[in-house]
Image 1 (cartoon, protein in one colour):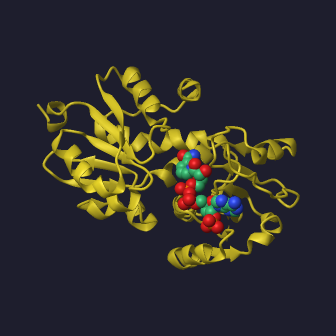
Image 2 (cartoon, helix red, strand yellow):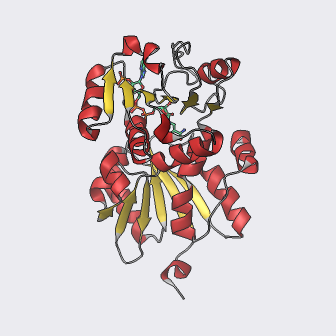
Image 3 (cartoon, helix red, strand yellow):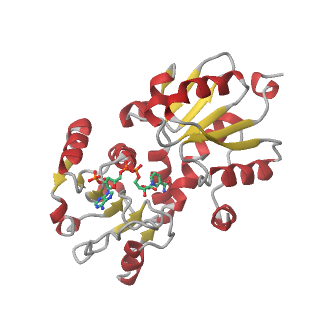
Length: 279
Ligand code: NAP
């Protein structure tokens, strides 16, 4: 019997807040698809209790855990080893407990972003043109890492707080150019991709104000998925541009964890999207 067979098929997501997380819907669908008697639970843990809870899951037999705000940095710091992506992004979202006490950290947000883009915009060619990235928070780090690794020749980065964009440009080095937030519409000129990684456009947040006049032929992707059809995506579609919503990123970023923890390759398809949207 392998170590993985001895341990229960158990995983979860740790965050604060976490009750809104749709990850259990994703994992439960995949458990059903693959006939795995598993469970995936939401674990609300305050930052000051993170280390105790995190180490506790390892000894309680969890195969792994996803971590979200505010634990993504702490999880990376506590891991024994980390993937290149987690180290480059500076945060982890997918943790694997090896069963002999080892903790491995990965970051699959960039993978999820890239997979979603490639499946939602199959005609998009990363190397063909620069990408315009709006926002310089945690999600932007993963997006920029994936774009540069995928061969995008230039990332134009713009953020309300310019200093945060400059910090990211310093971190990633050549290939990232900072553009003033006031110039965000003009910066879409010649871009093959426009990505919103800010929280603007989310339910309860102000809308993202940008003109797509210069974004001729660009693919437009919004990381926001609540609502699914943001004003940005609706405007892109009105102009005949390819629009890719953010739900697919959420679904795809969960796949590496499922594969590693449960040894099966789960599908991201319409049935999964429908189930997650239904709640
Ligand atoms: P974050 O680290 O808090 O960053 C928030 C970003 O939004 C910053 O760039 C911030 O700019 C900008 N912003 C916030 N309010 C703004 C305003 N009024 N005007 C202009 N810019 C504003 O958050 P995050 O973790 O990167 O997440 C960002 C978004 O991505 C969220 O909507 C999240 O749900 C979404 N997301 C989606 C997925 C997915 O799987 N689809 C994955 C991760 C994140 P400043 O630096 O100036 O504050």
